[in-house]
Length: 230
Image 1 (spheres, rainbow, N blue to C red):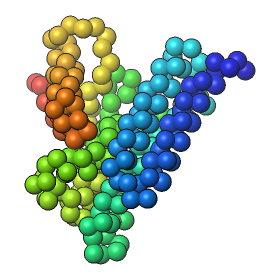
Image 2: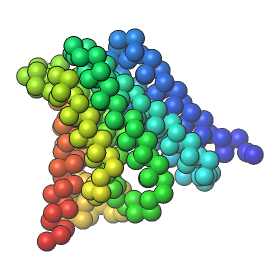
Image 3: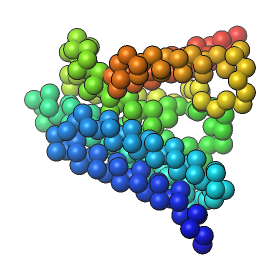
Image 4: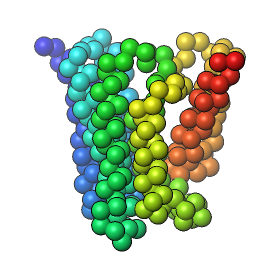
């Protein structure tokens, strides 16, 4: 087999490795570093797909390996992050374990995605990387906005977040995919709005802006769905 055929899979394995290192980091008490490893893993996840298309070496092995890596980086890692956050706040030993719905339904979503032919142009349900980015950057949001953190960083608040967004992972809600067939403004207005919000959030709030961006992503998708049904 040619060397170039191994390049995308090697990048995928680095995605998995970053997820594992992120988990170790969080378990060592560095919850804020979790977001960094999720971002790095997301970069690798983009690069492996890009490399596979560029080199024309897509394969079923690569597809399955990608899902396995994503379970670790975008399922287990964010699950451990929110578990540690809940554990640090909870006086009830078993309560934080309720947040582990995240890796369970992330794995289910990834398996479902591989079999779902409807998701070529739009996502059905919240993508696991988006959910992982939202969960992993919550500590940054809570630090920047302590009043929000006071309400949402309680064990009950974190469990609610875990369950709401885990259910969104496997929901049947169509969501925007940032795939431009052309750059016509009227046809891509929601994509352009999402990009503008993303630039604003990163420029003003850095990592703390990611949860706001993901919420805007869900909100714009719901608005688009409602308008398209009229």
